[in-house]
Amino acid sequence: MKYLTPLAAAAMAAMTFNTAHAGGLYGEIGYSDLDLKVAGSRTSSESMVRNVVGYELHPQLSVEGMLGMGTGGGAPKINQMMGVFVKPKILGLGNDFEITGRIGYARTKVTKADGTTDRAGSFAYGIGASYRVHPNVTLTLDEMRYRKKDGVTVQGLTAGVGISF
Image (cartoon, rainbow, N blue to C red; front, side, top):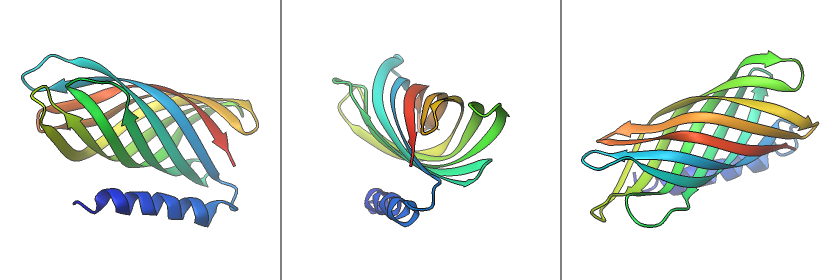
């Protein structure tokens, strides 16, 4: 498992370089407002900057890699998050607005209130929407549950901007 982070980063880089000229590549940067619940402590509100690199395999289906970095201090806090997702388009309303799902796997690193670090991966899922404001630029909003495992729950809302290449 200690090789998962470098392996996921290498896979994301390879996907970017291999598909850069295929026309279906996109990126997204977003700000996440997350709820972090650690068993035995109160729910804390955390923030994260989330980066997504994706490739549209079909007009109804994309694959994505995600890397998020927590911006909060103190404990409990979210340090980092990595994930791999499948993103189906659930409903397209015209050419500019669509509702999407996101299903996959996310690995989180959390610092608990007692100062210990917890790393674990789990099933992740969510629903979102995007609105195209320019042929290559979209505004996005999604609600995700990234983790519910080992007494730790991470979930929240992300607003972002996407760019198609």
